[in-house]
Length: 451
Ligand SMILES: Cc1ncc(COP(=O)(O)O)c(C=O)c1O
Image 1: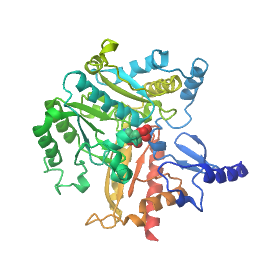
Image 2 (image 1 turned 60 degrees about the horizontal axis):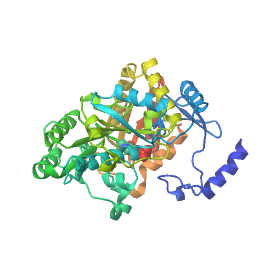
Image 3 (image 1 turned 30 degrees about the vertical axis):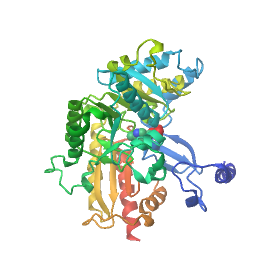
Image 4 (image 1 turned 90 degrees about the vertical axis):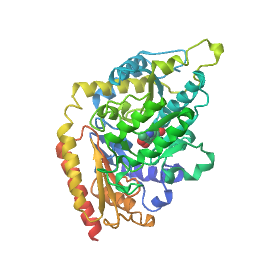
């Protein structure tokens, strides 16, 4: 095994180009090699265990290696592994669409499948854009999004995103959107306090809608948690007010629940915390509990009907991906939804979420943690050089990355977002495991900064 790995590591260095990776960082040491996984643990080539504290980029839901999901995929493999989804259909796709419609707000009745979070979001925006043309309001072309929002890495979703460190290199290729301030209370653009701000960060939206509502098509945002933008958990009051403004203006509300969907915030979907009724709901990541790539964009009958006509009218939605509605992925998703029901996953989350959120707050005692935020099974810790002034560490110190490397020694995968460390735990993480993760993190931080 080990000699195999030596060869594999050499080949990795020679041939691979990893995502979001500066390969020079791994000139001397190789990257973490994962041999296998079980439950909430990933195991390297020497059998050392690491907590999968970021759910393998936020998609593992019930832990790794769940037999029920493996079995469902295997059963489906005997029947049908893949077929194009245009003009053909299949049982797992149909059943999954029905389950998603049942799980989401009543008015969301139509499901369009694709294969990743970026496509789920891009599809929603394209549908909204084409919808307005087809209902006689072609002037509605404006798209609104949030600073620090993240919706993917395709050219379309980069245009929607508000995380310049990821996308600025491509700025000339992107289309423009109206960008609202992020509801990032710790670093409020208006230097206000949450209890008295009256959501000043929504004023630009009010002004925009007063001025140009008739030109707007849609707004896209991540409800209650801007994930890749820094795990910014924000208030339900903000979301409620935003929804009200958008509904009054009569434009489409697109919720990107690619990260927040499937229990992460403590409810199946974040929208449930505020009873929101978006016109589009984008899902991926946890949809298959992390087993296979799949995404879904849900929308209303009203939107669907605007595309329904004689072919010659040119109203067809010309969008599709090779693996749209892949039957293996759909069976994994169905098996995951069965586990949610059978294990009463959401009903049992309460004490674990409380443990995580209370335990996380204790880290505010640490001299270099300026803010702790989170919800559900997500907790984030913002590192700062000076707590009083909230001064960040100099980017060249790469504090987050150094702590990540150190964390590996403690059996933690704390892949940060800049200087924001976070836990994005599989819902199956037990209370004892949560305690252990927090204890390891505490030891790591004290020992790291003592040096
Ligand atoms: C909220 C959100 N939307 C969209 C995406 C893009 O998903 P994918 O990486 O599958 O394209 C992500 C990925 O992290 C995300 O967090």
